[in-house]
Amino acid sequence: MKGHANVHRGEAATYTCEAGVLQFPAGLGVRPAEVYIPIVSRFVEQVPPWALGLHGHVVSCFEELGVEVVLGEDFEIEICTTFDR
Image (cartoon, rainbow, N blue to C red):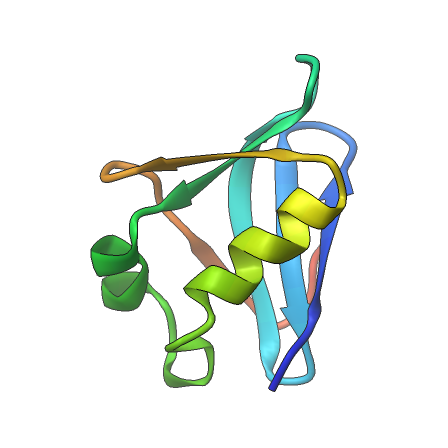
């Protein structure tokens, strides 16, 4: 199940597919914009079953938008059914 990445006003970036939304912290006031994604081992600890195995795809989707992906151990993912600002 593949989805798409988006950046939003404020400091949020999302990956959305039919099953739900993964929301990541982001630094959108810098050039280039940055999204903060957990490293693979932390990613799989935080995501629901539908998102397992999508780390590389999520990273690629943000890179295709021109967003710099920063990987780290301490970044948190918020799991949503929709994105509300």
